[in-house]
Length: 97
Image (cartoon, rainbow, N blue to C red):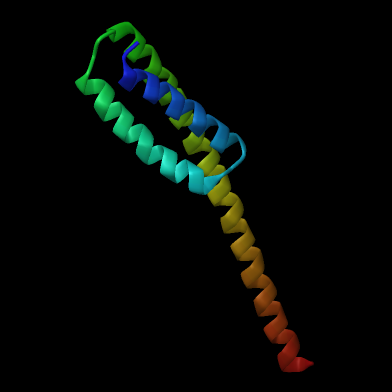
């Protein structure tokens, strides 16, 4: 396995751990590293089958990441709506209180 593919595998594993713990800062950093590792691995193809397997693993991971991000975005959107409604209720209460 080439060094670039090894780095790609290690970065993908770290990204999976960060995703499991919802460590968004680490996910952002690891996403950049994954992109660099993919570029490097594509330039240094020594074992096409291994590279293909790592890329498929990474694709599945990114699909999972997108799903989790969409769920988190929805949750945060709901929280913001609820917060806004609470503020509006407090304003009405202050006007008549």
